[in-house]
Image 1 (spheres, rainbow, N blue to C red):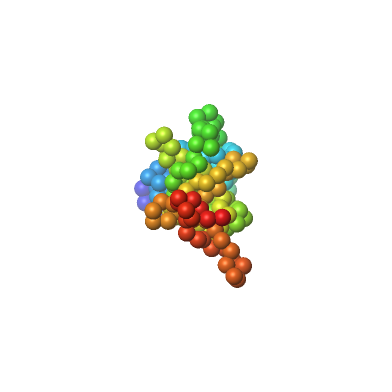
Image 2 (image 1 turned 90 degrees about the horizontal axis):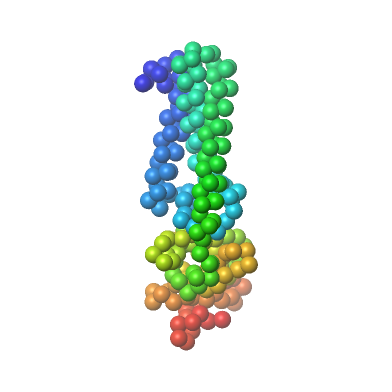
Length: 216
């Protein structure tokens, strides 16, 4: 195996093949156990479109390309006995083909998931956890994991306060026309903490008001 991958001109394809395969498999395993990069999760329900779904797999796409490039190039050079130039072309085609296959699988998964999505309003009042950083003052979207009907679901989320870091416990306080949810961080007693503006003009959070409701 070493001679196949690293003898002569083998490293041209062997190194991308090994690194791409290892990285792709590692991220796939992390994804399935929910410990991957914040852009690498395969959620049970993501309220986004297929294009956005593929963007979050950008790292997997790069890994897939190098994996396909390496193994296709090795097959052409070692298996078919072709020279370096045609092997490079075949390798590039193999990498591009594997990326296309990954995109097709993602779109197929989206099609199946979209039919089973629940009404987003059912998430209001539930607790969850920030899975992707949620930018401050609705300046961008993050993602939140919420358990509904014993199933973990992922929602695009915004907040009215400062940035909510990954891993923060949050509470869903509303929904938006663009199919996102609005969340606030929770305090130790599981109550939403509303944002406020300090004397310096920056956003912060204040504690809950009466009956556990967020202070305006």
